[in-house]
Image 1: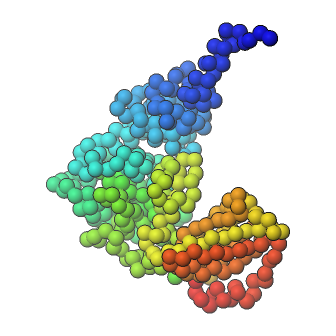
Image 2: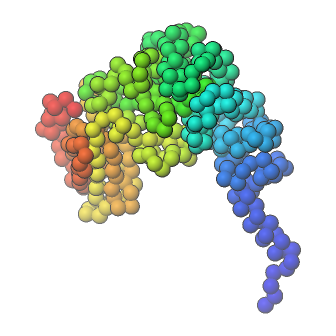
Image 3: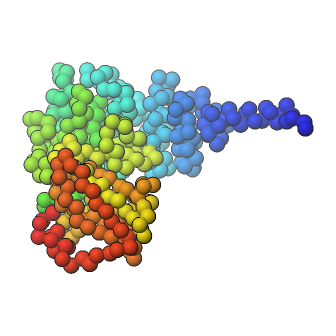
Length: 396
């Protein structure tokens, strides 16, 4: 039997090389060899971003090819993790300025050199906080805040001063469900808690202080929910009320309330670091379960079966009583063993597994430092009446 021809071998080697560089043709875009500009660890992500960007792909490529050599790795991380909505609209100038001004802030302030590179990428470079419009706020905020931080060498003192500036410019007032942008909130002088948080996090990032969004989906002890800021200061995460200045970190109007929280989530631009409790890992963003930083927490472990067999990929929903109804605070899918587990603050929870027509539910009592095991069977649905009233009467 004859072996493959020399030309076939060359084709195979070229294809293997392309896969190694970028996967599925990702090493080249519009005739440009991406590996010339993009570090290997980000090739696949950048190639996917260029493809998803559609007509805006050339704009992203323009930024990639124009970036200085010293900024290529940072820009590649930024592009590889842009959400789809930003891939369609981000300009080359916006991306290049984001990278450049982030680096400038890191070099300008004495605390910049103390921030580990992965923390810098996830929580300083990140160009958006939540669902606000994508805006180029770095230059404006850097110019505004630099005089206020003059002479400060402590990251903690700088963080407190940034929040004082924010408090002078933004107060609380309900707006609408759609998040305002940074400039809209600054111009109006008010916003919801999430909009106050967006301004505060943008301000912190603009001067090289790592910051991220934190929130509780619903309080377990009263109606409503809340969002605030978490700051990475000298190796640890701390919290503060956004645009609500205090003289110390880990001190806010909600400090007592958050100690009784059911769940606190923190958002991450890109994949979360494995040293945190990851609630959900998406392709380009992650959510961290931060409840253990705030409250006495335990573990809820739910085993779901159907006809005696572990039920795989079944949604499990955990709810609390809020605004006169059961409100979902978390949803997980069962693993290959039919189980789902979650860290929660101490308290009682309504837990439901399955879907309409095939579900089961129960109350779960989570205690600090303990594991609560709960079994749910999709072929055995109890009536709601009695235990539903019990949940309401306990005020959980």
